[in-house]
Image (cartoon, rainbow, N blue to C red; front, side, top):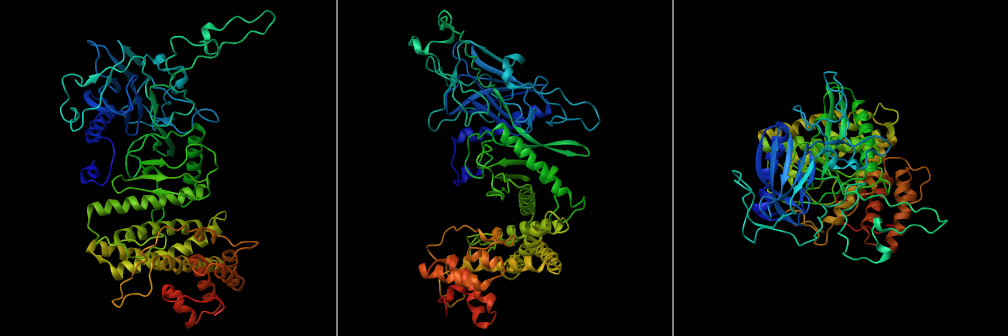
Length: 604
């Protein structure tokens, strides 16, 4: 809402975004079990309730419209505006969430409203309560249909609410109106309800009304002719069921000594992305179950460090929401590492993550993003530095220059990541990867902390924070690490810094010492950081030879690459680092420190 007011974001009509405040009030009333009635905005006929799910109102037109939401003792009734007298479409349910891992191998195929509704203690996953009492009855699958609960009712012909004319806003905020909105128009006869985003896994799409007369080949099931004499009977096709009106938000179940905790796996909320509102992107049941499996394994890894606190430690119960990104099905297979992860300073404990195939990668990412959330909370409370927001600083984990606030975020997050890998050093199954990543991240984080201490205008709280990071990292720099892993970590750090300068900086540096940036700089993928984590058994490429501890063969390979393309930053950075590894003297240190000032010639 604030981004829309400031003109830094786009989205639906402003009245619809402002009406989201009423949706939050309705959600709070459901949690509290109180009674209220408010006008709420719909998107394509659906009302999304934060951390609960999505309720569809039948026979509503696409786009932004309005409806009347009424809560009573945990029950929600959603009503469209009347078309004739008091007739209007109405749907009623008791919203509740559903665990990501359902019954059976793939879980329930679709979910409907649970008959008992929310409990006063909040919306928890299925399982025993902390007091030892038995769990709630299981949710009935949506294939039973909402009618089994008596949850859907409609009176009279369906009606729809039309979006207000440009510049006009319906009564959405403030005291509820005495009746439904007056700007109502009935849909065209035979209009089909619109779909909301991606259809729920296993749910059949709403069928369009059949034409008045159809050819014999398209006859309805009731008009199927009797089979000819002697022919096998033709079974009538199963009836197609409409999707259940209530689509519950799935949750990741985390067991704690006090009882299970439900962490939203949010694929429905329009504001779950970091930018503009997005439609639902419902996960397949198998993909949701895989999220629960990988999350369970990641939690087990985090628990291996014990119950103590410190950098890199995380209680998963503190996570407020996980937003799956980029995939909704099991295929294609997930990559071993996290391709995308992000968090917002306006949503503490929530994180957007593309699911990896590795529980270790997910555990590291949970720590990383929660570090961002903690620092964002501090920045809301205290000014930590005076930042001019100019992007001119090197961050060892980014392809682009960063401003000081971004640099502080990176230093704080990766100090936590360094602590995560330090805790893995004693775990045999993770020891090799942990030695490399611990050595790499402590070196990179300390470099950024030094930049903050020498370049940033830190406030008193900011100075205390960064001094604390420096003390922690200085202690970790004295922790012994496997020499081969340490060598690969130092090489990977040098490769990233060298390639960053070649791709971003223009030569020469100005006489005032200020860095000059290339006008053609852009994003470039960093594949070396993870590639150097293990020693290649049978190296083929120059990078692999360098990672295997053979800089001479690597240097020859980079020289051949440069003969084909002398301006290739990847090959040039590899050539500079391999040459400095073979001959660590003054002549090689200069291009390593300022590669943009010198264009070395292979063989020279």
